[in-house]
Image 1 (cartoon, rainbow, N blue to C red):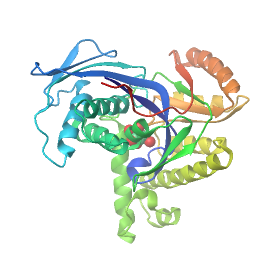
Image 2 (tube, protein in one colour; image 1 turned 90 degrees about the vertical axis):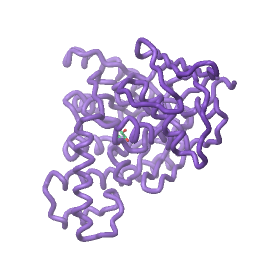
Image 3 (cartoon, rainbow, N blue to C red; image 1 turned 180 degrees about the horizontal axis):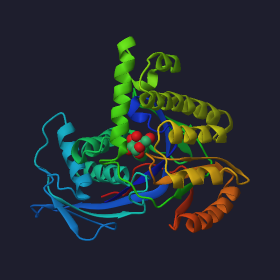
Length: 365
Ligand code: GLA
């Protein structure tokens, strides 16, 4: 059987998911495809991939964490077993061949695409009951509890629940989701500055947000999430300036998601100024941008027909997006690529993309 799951870009709502705020990602047409079959005579499972030489092996019934890319697949096997209500019987081993067009380390959620595709492959192979939201949770548990990256739910939900022609609006406090029609084109620009969430400033930002929430709770013990705070509460809390800046970003960015959803519903378009405000806030308040991402934001927004531009994903490198009319974005991509390479000495990659479908079975058993 063959299944696949996409990478994603986040249109708006950055660093809000793990603070109980909303996000608005869309699945993109770069996918990770898994061909899988049962191997009843083998005592170990194996996986090979297009992104790393050699095979990884694991016992599907007792996967160990080994620190290689195979952990994403092992983590999914572990998460499926540990989230079943009834104890699962011993499963037969499997083999998997994986191909991915989602670049790794670029902030397009290659790991979520792999986890969601592997989860779908396993539940289909073993005929386990499942629904899309459950796949997303399985993939998220693999990433956070098994691999050990403290990410929010956005990437796995976007990869599992994406729909062509729609962005996915996720309220990360209740995990309610809705598909918002979005037929527009987005330019995705990979700065080729790679970064990993593990051991990065990402973990520090999470801790800062937890500290800000703890301080706000001194005055309002019922405050469930940082994203639920008001700007007045933040101003009144008298917290250290750095924490105040992080909290302000989260609260204002959550509001920008609401504004963007309302405008998408009204006109089908993203509001450029809202995207630009998001970038400035990530740069100045959340301090997760980079010189390359800032350059993209500034330069792209001077070009005719580009309505707005911002970093997407965690930041500190990776990708940025720009919105506007498709023909203008195509011209902008050519120009920005040449200028970027001349200034930064790195070869960027770019894609003109539209909202794509989430995880799917491409070829049944
Ligand atoms: C990474 C994480 C997501 C989210 C973004 C920032 O992509 O995996 O959960 O926190 O950063 O918005």
